[in-house]
Length: 232
Image (cartoon, rainbow, N blue to C red; front, side):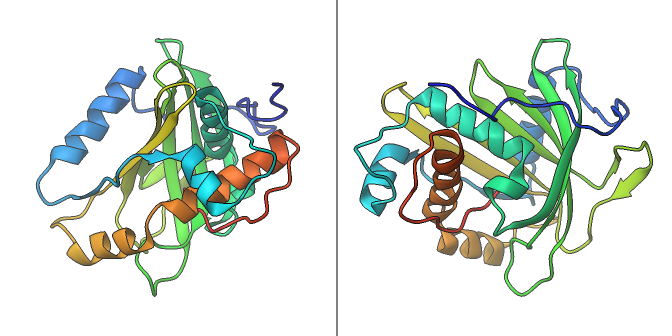
């Protein structure tokens, strides 16, 4: 299989090396885990999802196509770099820049997007994230930031429409029977049961179907029957 656009491409904007918080993916992981374990933060981790089973149940693809672990990782990388294309119903605008290779050989970049708030009834706002990828472990971390240096080197600010949050997406399971694992920690002062209820109510199946349908359409030259709503 030839993947046409899932590689992390250099931005046309000037490189920005001033916003990286960690020299390695391991250090970024440590920040995520500290946030995950801190009292008061709001943690959500749905059960891992069998994506081929999900696609079959949803009748989203034709011809018995099955996605491998490699394909799913390519989809995660594509979505991380270009959320405006892969999840346009949630990311209203977005761009990524400043790609670097960390001292451990793993990719890093930053992105800015306008996203609807996780809680219903609030306006969209700017979300800033450092993005750390571990291709060998098939895991990507999105670490929310209140301020980053933009593509031109000027500071940019995140919106105040919701607390910062960190997200992990990972491909687990086997190569032939891959699973999607994702978890999110909102950096709240006290745990927010309403936020948990809202996200549990929304579920993750539609989010996964949305971006996978786009990946199948753009990268595999197939036409999914439906493109449900996706998130991050």
